[in-house]
Image (cartoon, rainbow, N blue to C red; front, side):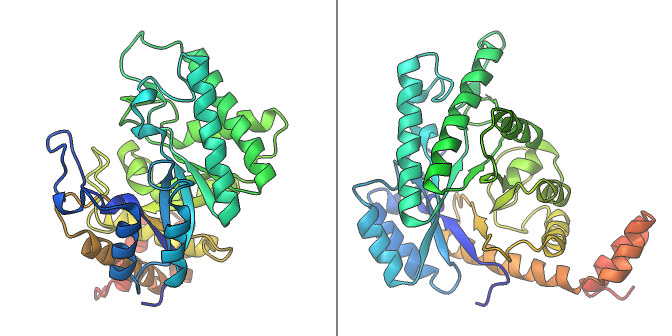
Length: 342
């Protein structure tokens, strides 16, 4: 399948898919699968659909298994596009990693993240920081000033280290889960973190944002608007493509829900020129009960269709509609591209 923008997929989509109601997961057949076996299974199943892969460090990929994983990927012509920090699954960080009240734990967490950045640098990958466990669960539980200072201090130190290693960091926000109130829970807070680090005189040109679509949808943040906003600030770094009902991080197939919002995003990315400098669409899915390989395939097919529909929208007529904020005309042009006889 010829893709308009290169892509990648998170290997975490192919695990047991555990929930708190089914802690063993719905896909019991893969519980004992090694990461090498999982990688080989997924590569073979998605050979014509996916360009690269993403792994969490140090739980999914680490110094012990990176070579055999790379060998499998290299033989198939695939790469590792991103490593993502996996502190959220470590029970030692129940009270946070970068914001933990214990300074020894904070130091350990930062050092592990640095090791992940080093690995990313060694293989030419990017590094995602999604601070899902950095937050709190109750009112009166947290000293907010201390929490934010510790978090920004950690990201600042990691940014400086990443600059030395020539690694781009993608910050990814989410409003809740696993922490009920994640500190960096919206786009504004993410840009706040970047700006606070910039105020310290640290180069933030390689500190950008990963837009997880369902994370934005959960917040009521419009995909296309925020993609443009980040592009205006040169902070649009990566995408985690998915969809959902908007109440929880469903990580459903792309375009299964929020179709029109996804279509508008595709059009905005075309106008921005996203992908021309090597950027990718990364699929972050969690197929609870579905066939995992087929769910990812369908997401790729759906996105390519959506992207092509966006390309059919008459740019001149759409601009005319936007120039006078004519919603009727704008929607008419969209439906013409979808095949409606308007």
